[in-house]
Amino acid sequence: MAQSSLLKYCLKSKATKISAVAKKLHLENTFLEKSLHQLDQNRQTPVWIDIDLELKDFIYKYLIEKRKQYKEKKFDFKSLSCLLNEGAFELLEKKKLDEEVGWSLKDLEFTHSLLLWHIATDILYYDQRRRYPQGSFSTHCRISKHVSDYMMHLLVKAPFMLRKGIGELRYRDTCREAVNFFNQDMRKKGVRLAATTLLAIDAEYREFLNWMKGQGQGKSVFFGGSALAMRLRLLSRDEYRRVDEEEVWEIISCVWVEMLISAANHCDWKDHKIQLRNGKELLTHIALLMAHLGLSKHIRMTDLPPQLMAEEDNYNPPWDWAELDRLAYYLA
Image 1 (tube, rainbow, N blue to C red):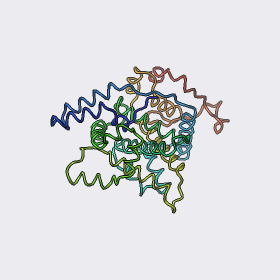
Image 2: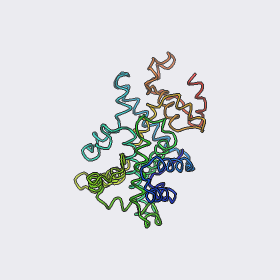
Image 3: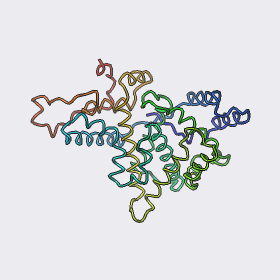
Image 4: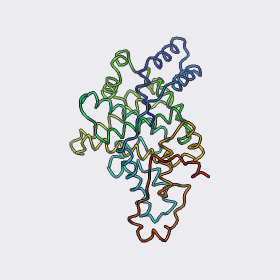
């Protein structure tokens, strides 16, 4: 599974040098600067990690729960879209967190929310690494980080697999604002110091002040993501809510899996086929598993074969993640 971190990329020397040269030559926010950043991003070799059993099990159980909810609605096809696309916000509503952080999901373009939550996840993850350098991370923390970085990889390398919008433009503007914010000390000491600094500033005020001065970087969500990180962190420090840090990570991991499901639901099969030229793709695995469970707008539910009717409630179809190389058969 490929990984990409926006904060790490923006702290690298090439990204900062491109922006510095563009500023010196008065070429900021021009086509040339954007093209150089895009070229640099395309040349980046993605980091690859194995999809461990924890992540597989978490996704599978999450989708099984989705199917149970679909069954409770008597497999009403009209309810499927809401079930697959609005689950993240509904999760926050159930947790009574929609007032604090619901703005990051409600009525926003998909890639807008993706960038907000990616920045927030990165900040919280690296701040936790700074606070507990020798400590181990919980399952939900690791899942959040891995899925977040995977979705960012798709936005950078395979945006056609995500919902149509201005995600690429928003990503470039966010990178530019991040590069302008990071100072030399942060670049030397790395992403942990940058994450801690972002949690220490009043990001919402900074974003508003830049907007008033006309200094905001177009469609950037850099300070918006920082503000979201602060809101999420404060949840575990609110004595009235009694939400500990692990519960916050559980919420974040569920939001990311909801985004993963929504992306898989919207990605067309022809786009899956195109991406397979570069090797197997997690999003394609998820889409196939969803289709297998009837959680797809391209699949209609039918009755079970007679031989399985007797064991309907206990029927658990075999699913081997390692043998999903027959996509051509499914698409035929």
